[in-house]
Image (tube, rainbow, N blue to C red; front, top):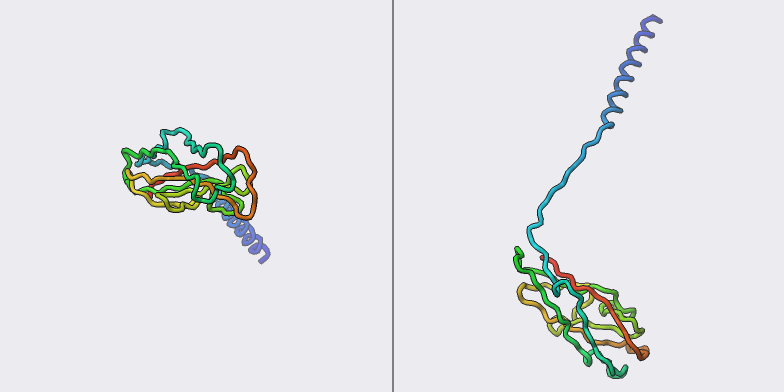
Length: 166
């Protein structure tokens, strides 16, 4: 009986060893994956890839900044020729003003820029649908924080026009 127990233990040891060996080897390999694709729609070009400058000029009195005066058209071009679809969306990205994050912040405290899309307020970092080749008229107007003063001197702001297919 003792001999039989030893043989049973030996068979169990061999079977357990084989099981562990097989189990360990089942996780010991890897497979590489290659992903390939094709871009079907060419990108749109904004302003021929050049920077866009909006000049408000000099001689602006802080008291004259009211969200209506000093509006300037944003001069840009949009070229989406050869695209698969005319259905696009556009947005202006940038850092929002501390007093209103839908307005573009400037280097001056209490001064921001409101962007308009075809004369309507166009909140910063929000999308608007457009249909190419119709290009929306974008404009920028100076806005002040009603609770603070604006110091005199130069100011600046930076934003990006983003266009994507819908």
